[in-house]
Length: 170
Image (tube, rainbow, N blue to C red):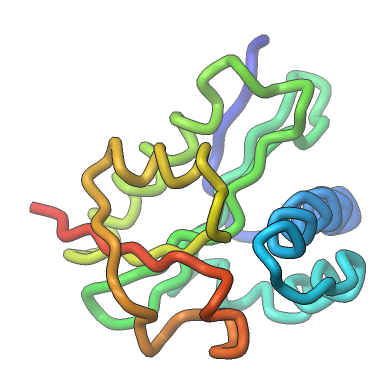
């Protein structure tokens, strides 16, 4: 599969990005419920992401999109700057048809490299407890487990169901 990966200043097709976010949240909500957490509405969460796109776009954020040659969106990952020297990795998702090709790893690596160019020395992330695929990825890249960090984008009511991670870059 020949994919284009590109950091964008805005989603070229906002409706397609919102649809991708609905899929992402659908998957994450199921994981959250499996971990004992509350059920949220994926459409509401996707709308909230769209309402706060400025946090995920330049100058302080970055949005990385993966598209097929025909422009179909198949993956994404964002960076949200939380301090002058730190950022949070958020919303990494690869559609099932694009999984198994190393796209997740590429999205992960490209965001880490971009965070360095943004002047970040620390990266933070969270994921749902039991999300073994993401936890494995974080561990492979040297992230360590920490308590909830103050700038975490999720409300403190989700703390019992999430894992928090940190990575200091050289």
